[in-house]
Amino acid sequence: MPEDSTEPLNGEKHYLCDDHDIWADELTFFEVEGRKVLIWRDLDEELHAYDAICPHQDRDLEETGKRGCMCGPHDDETTITCAAHTWEFDLETGEGVNPSGNGLNEYEAGVDGGEIYVVMSEGS
Image (spheres, rainbow, N blue to C red):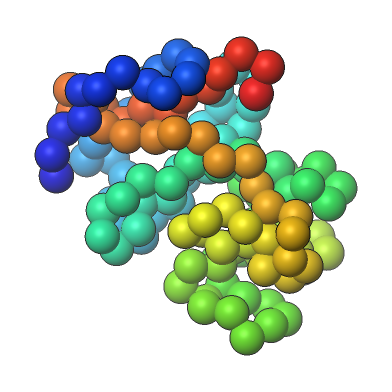
């Protein structure tokens, strides 16, 4: 995987772990600047970073999130469901798929110097 050494678009890079610590199709959680963040590396090795809090009732997806679709015709491989009330989100985009329109906040993520980072802007 090529290393990304570009400057972040808007905010400060927070280094989370070694690039080899998150495998393809692995989902993991980190605490960054007092926020819970989920990082998912897809099968194409792309990193996706989102708030790990369900917008419905502020449930922590590390505790309530389940991989796969529970109540709709969505792709099980790229869906995370908040088991508290079955709200579902697409891990590729962060968009809400059940119900639609209520997505997870997305953050810039990448690899720099062999380490995975996420960019948190002020006020995010």
